[in-house]
Length: 479
Ligand SMILES: *[C@@H]1O[C@H](CO)[C@@H](O)[C@H](O)[C@H]1NC(C)=O
Ligand SMILES: *[C@@H]1O[C@H](CO)[C@@H](O)[C@H](O)[C@H]1NC(C)=O
Ligand SMILES: *[C@@H]1O[C@H](CO)[C@@H](O)[C@H](O)[C@H]1NC(C)=O
Ligand SMILES: *[C@@H]1O[C@H](CO)[C@@H](O)[C@H](O)[C@H]1NC(C)=O
Ligand SMILES: *[C@@H]1O[C@H](CO)[C@@H](O)[C@H](O)[C@H]1NC(C)=O
Ligand SMILES: *[C@@H]1O[C@H](CO)[C@@H](O)[C@H](O)[C@H]1NC(C)=O
Ligand SMILES: *[C@@H]1O[C@H](CO)[C@@H](O)[C@H](O)[C@H]1NC(C)=O
Ligand SMILES: *[C@@H]1O[C@H](CO)[C@@H](O)[C@H](O)[C@H]1NC(C)=O
Ligand SMILES: *[C@@H]1O[C@H](CO)[C@@H](O)[C@H](O)[C@H]1NC(C)=O
Image 1 (cartoon, rainbow, N blue to C red):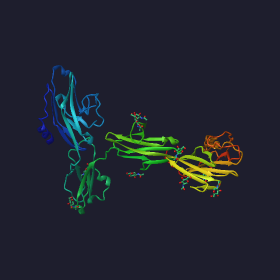
Image 2 (cartoon, helix red, strand yellow):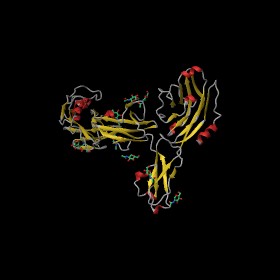
Image 3 (cartoon, rainbow, N blue to C red):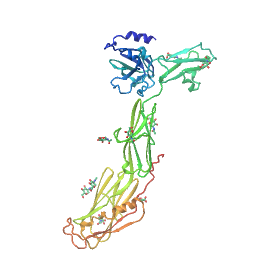
Image 4 (tube, helix red, strand yellow):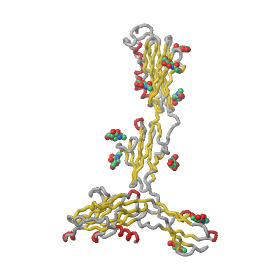
């Protein structure tokens, strides 16, 4: 009541006169978060007799909105109001008595802003654009009051009531809690009510009882979790496994969850639910995924990098002769990045030795390795390139046969049968794939002096079935 009177006194300046239109409302109002406020308001518009048959509609709009946007409050029976003000912003007076008073219950931070008033009746359609109401929302600092109906007597139960002025029906509920030495033995749940029923004991005399009030937990979806992911921002999964990502947001009101592909909430929406599922993860599924949680109070997002683990995939090796030196290049893709090793017979070649040198490099998920071998072939020489990571190994063997040659440069053997063999390996069919290469008899540019003498020539390529092993690194996610 006091507030009301005070507000009436504050009127005046905001009275506007414009062709018979006038609005009396305070310029601004301050409310503590979670509490309620009533803003008295009167409006005048030109009356004409036939208006009496027309319905009178009044509206409060967010300042800056168009008249086609949802209002924050209205008496119009079919106009929907904004969802975030629904039930909280209310017209409390009778519009026919020129009353445009607005009540705001359970004020939220997001209610802060300016609001304009509009009237519609028959041909009268008018927005009072020159006076608007500014709502300020401050922290809840109001101290609670404790009411004790009768004197506290040792051994007699008593009711203590805690209240906050400015709180009101329908507002966001406040959370009450009672603390004090006298209550230490009480069931904690009975201490969470605004009314504390309590039986004092003699030893409680002189101790403090405190009532605490805070905003009931109601928050933006700040607390997002990707279930099964823990809190890490990346996750690795073995190719072919099933994966279930679930986005969990702690929020009140509950948040709507959606998934996006990419580093942030962008244009690629991939799901409008909390869950993303893959029956079998493939390499193409690797990437960044972002989950967004959104409710009326705000939004939050969390993203995760998905890495797909897979065993090495060797591409076709390439070998050629050049000036009595054999060059072979081998490359493999895998995640984690594979290591490549060369074997000559049973001897592993590392770094440089007198007749062989190896250079390797890696980019992203690919490793290349080149072997340069100075060799005079007198018997069959077996070269092996092996790729390996934690999830398996794969190797390719090149057999060098002394004998009648074809062009040395045609030794680019790797091509042969590669793809099919790879497929076999990938299918884990443990058969030795043995492919006899037809030797070529074409002169190579690379080796102009190539002749039909007894140069070493490749004959055979064997894809070893050593193949792929899936180790113990299984990421079990619920499905
Ligand atoms: C305390 O309040 C409860 C319920 O409001 C009532 O049943 C009880 O009688 C009250 N006790 C005292 C001592 O007033
Ligand atoms: C009770 O609270 C007051 C004010 O916080 C404090 O000064 C006083 O020491 C407290 N008394 C006891 C017994 O804790
Ligand atoms: C994730 O972080 C939250 C707080 O940031 C913590 O409460 C929770 O236990 C963490 N979860 C895991 C699985 O580490
Ligand atoms: C969103 O669209 C723009 C252009 O329409 C494009 O450049 C951008 O890459 C897209 N974002 C994502 C994450 O794909
Ligand atoms: C999710 O909903 C938004 C808005 O309703 C829509 O634009 C988008 O295409 C939807 N995404 C999917 C994957 O259905
Ligand atoms: C190995 O030999 C190559 C040339 O054959 C040379 O560039 C490289 O520096 C050598 N590496 C080492 C570790 O000796
Ligand atoms: C691997 O080989 C390919 C083709 O030969 C080449 O383009 C790439 O740069 C090489 N990468 C590295 C890291 O050596
Ligand atoms: C390369 O040289 C080593 C000794 O340095 C020798 O044992 C090996 O047989 C040679 N390999 C070939 C293929 O000639
Ligand atoms: C390569 O994988 C096979 C199959 O799992 C395994 O038996 C073998 O030991 C691996 N080779 C090496 C050198 O680790």
